[in-house]
Image 1 (tube, rainbow, N blue to C red):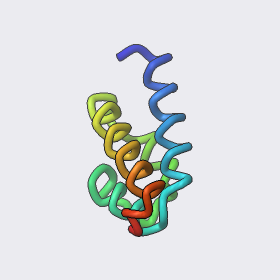
Image 2 (image 1 turned 180 degrees about the vertical axis):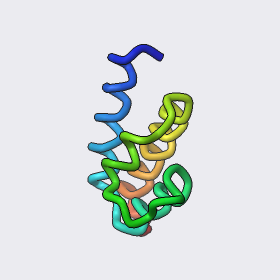
Image 3 (image 1 turned 30 degrees about the horizontal axis):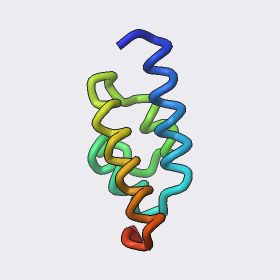
Length: 74
């Protein structure tokens, strides 16, 4: 993945995660930044390996869809 796509993916993740609950953000950090759970969510996104970005974006998208339907309460 080129740098421009990585930057786009990280920006999208940060925007999506900003709409998630603290509990959902904590779960995200458990999956992708488990060694530093107290870190801000944006730090976790910035530290993610590029090969995890696509799947993480899919997870956040699905979480936000559930939230919009009233199904995900974190």
